[in-house]
Length: 164
Image 1 (cartoon, one colour):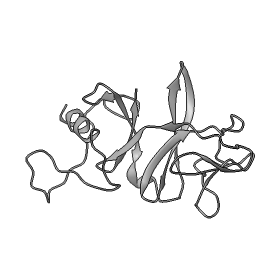
Image 2: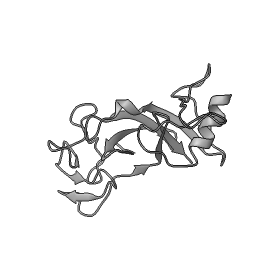
Image 3: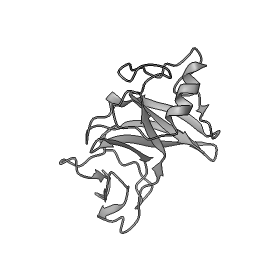
């Protein structure tokens, strides 16, 4: 259960990518990782202090700056909905994997969400361009629409989805 309590504390404050946070009572130079206890894992939600569900998406090292994203699913109105997480300019962002122009998945091959320059998220079907940091349309047929952003945070080298 110590892992759950540690995650509750970590989810209440933002962290920088790759930052290691110390265990309570440890010296500032000591670091630790959130470790799952038996039965805890990617598909088993836990909660933070506010009672908000938190789910592990991936290791932070799985996301490189403007590189491949990590696909995952969330439940929405009883249905599994595709989503993805990416890293851009050192920060982690996540969105539903659905173009704002027409509800189609963005990636042209699993995990490929960025354009050739790594500057924008691009819809592989219609060429709509989205700002990685906000999901706002920056060009193409999406005209002022935006991707649906998900609440994610990074702590102790792991990326988590905050639900609720």
